[in-house]
Length: 193
Image: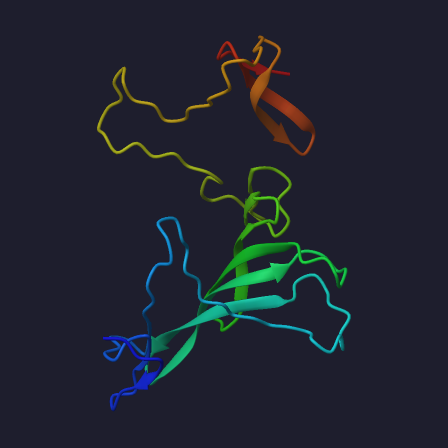
């Protein structure tokens, strides 16, 4: 059965259902074989009262239970990436809290589809950033088997078939504050400079 809007005696809210199974339960029928049904959270400036800045947007905050209360846990936010009012370029920010009631952005998907972990403005397809001392690796690939055999792959760099790949192409470059210190090229040769 369906209904426009229901509030149960237990406090559950149902939209499109008379039997909501959670505090908010929205039920809708698909409109086609390839349809995506969305919940819209809109924040607007209909009166043009504000000079909108990069970082403004809308989001969902998740508060988690703590003893006798709740605290800020995490959020997913759609954020403006432009400070120009008419430009709606938008990124998606994922934030977490470190037991301090403050949301710290942990990951961003930019308007161009670039992913940054620890980076709010990634400039490559996938960028990982960490500040401070490294007591753990920045990126770790862990293999679950006791020993590797000839069929195991840890990292696969796959390029289009029509690309010309030569020994001078470097796919992994190792750098420190002084510059490039080593690389791995297409012949899987480790070089140091």
